[in-house]
Length: 103
Image 1 (cartoon, one colour):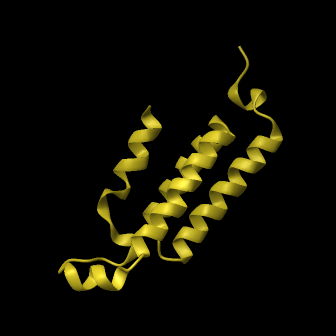
Image 2 (image 1 turned 120 degrees about the horizontal axis):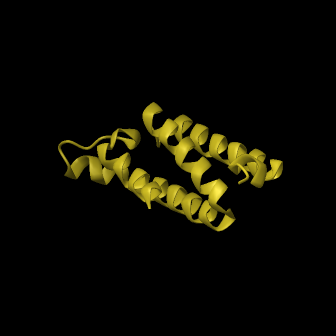
């Protein structure tokens, strides 16, 4: 039986590492992700990129849209919520994408 690395083309490997790195670094620099979140996003991105381009598209769409909606009208959210945390400090962010990887 062939190993996974011999079945996956080098283009897919380069694509997976490139996309995962770009998205996780962008999220960390824009304060959408904490350091732990960026590491988790990198690993989750690798898994989804190896699974296929359609999974990559869905994951990227989820990431960019959730980042947008988190920051959308954050000043209003800040006024309404006493324990509002700006951007990266949301605790449930680890469980949501990680549980999806199990399935």
